[in-house]
Length: 156
Image (cartoon, rainbow, N blue to C red; front, side):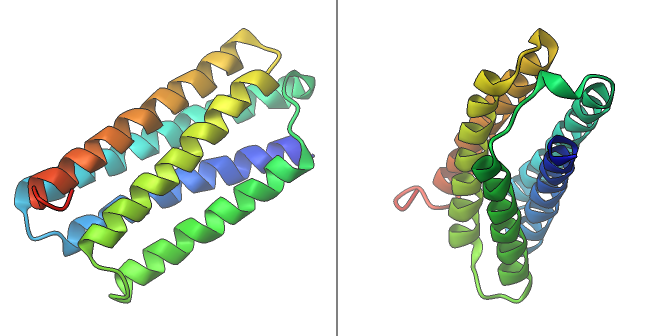
């Protein structure tokens, strides 16, 4: 079933985002910022669990959510981008500033994806789930730019 596969990919995206924040925290020389990145990592696991709950809900009523095939393909592209960023950080192909900016950009794409999801949901509970995820993404973007500004006040 395409919708459940899409939710599996969304769950994996949140898990990958958590791993990304852990990777960035490892290359960050500032202890406070590293702690903030680990907090973001944990929050992504909360998002992952929320999506898992949504997936379980859809198992019982799969007609509550419709997702166009191009949106499903977009999920795969986002997952590939996330894995690429994690590998680039791990392989030292991307430094701290670039990794933080890329993570913020991915959060922005996820935020828009979740906002679009609100319109595609027929159920109030699932709509609330996507609203919660979108707000969490927006908050993470702000926090990432706060981190950049704290590390590099003139470059952030």
